[in-house]
Image (tube, rainbow, N blue to C red; front, side, top):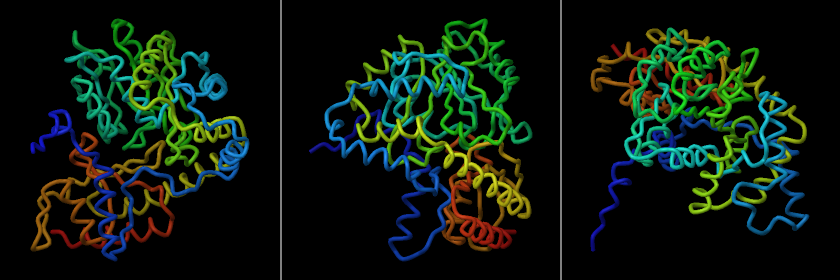
Length: 399
């Protein structure tokens, strides 16, 4: 019997973050303790009042049927209220589609917008799944690369140079996974000045780390003059509310794009889980205090990790402005050896550190920068100190 998978699956790259997490679990199953700094998952539990919101929904007994594909009306209205309050964006519920995580939200957008051969400009470094989704939608990613010296933010001039007659969209995250970079209003206005000459190009703004932003202001690209009608804002509850397992994301977009995403989602998964939606409604309409406390904890860890990384010879490190990642340049270790193993790239270095330091990280190659690796500091201070001590010791043996 033939066991040939379809070409689209056979050529689809595995998620590097999930692959490294799986390797770490394999070690743990063998009794080898691994400190995992590979997944972008808060180490906090979902705040208690959000849990209680879900329990109340179960006890009410009203939410056991299929919800509307695009989400309950009151949740979509709560999202609109949040966007107006926090982001100065005025939407109606018809502009909102609630999905099974922001990942599905982005996939819906690509499948709704792209035709075969359409190009999507991807700000690099980028979240690992962007390119896989573009390829699945038969589009073509075009990369513009930010440098560590510029906080990993590609410039408006690079954007202009990358635009062709096939460009359909651009995508970026701010705060950024994997770099922690945050675009300022000035950055966005420069981008908008380029895009005004190309009204056929749409902007996909991934804002999933909005609540983990250490700057004075979180800026939504859609709030820039003239950009709202061509921007799809992606957000969700996983990061800011420690709700990764609840799987709730959403888009705010022009109604015709929202209708397309609703149509797409209706044929793939239908609606997001009813009880998860009630938890999300509670998150938006009740106390944000726990969210801000989590941000304070991340801020403290950021300072600690920056100091410890800066103390490791050869690493190039910048101070991220948001999210909970560092993305150090580790190229100084390429070509070095411990006498038995020679490190040729960041992927090999990550595996070497997994084997010798018992710390899991993710290669920057998966994010579009082969000179770097990603370290998540969504872990306890104790684990972070121990992990970085191990990394420093192991790297010191490479010559």
